[in-house]
Picture 1 (cartoon, rainbow, N blue to C red):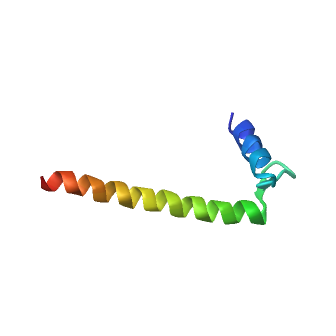
Picture 2 (picture 1 turned 180 degrees about the horizontal axis):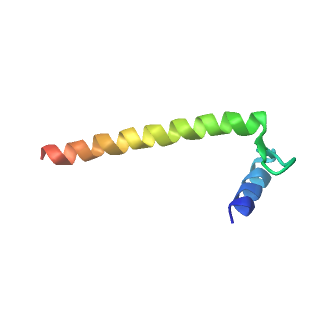
Picture 3 (picture 1 turned 90 degrees about the horizontal axis):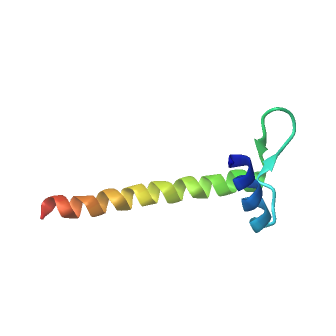
Length: 59
């Protein structure tokens, strides 16, 4: 399931995110760059969620 999702994402982006050599796939430079951005987005979303929850605790 994960492999298929990654393949679909790569197809949508038109770029490989992993080099599939050997037993363990390695991120391509594009994949590493996208991962960095994705982690930042998740961190930002977590901070926003915590901020929103703090508004309701005060009320």
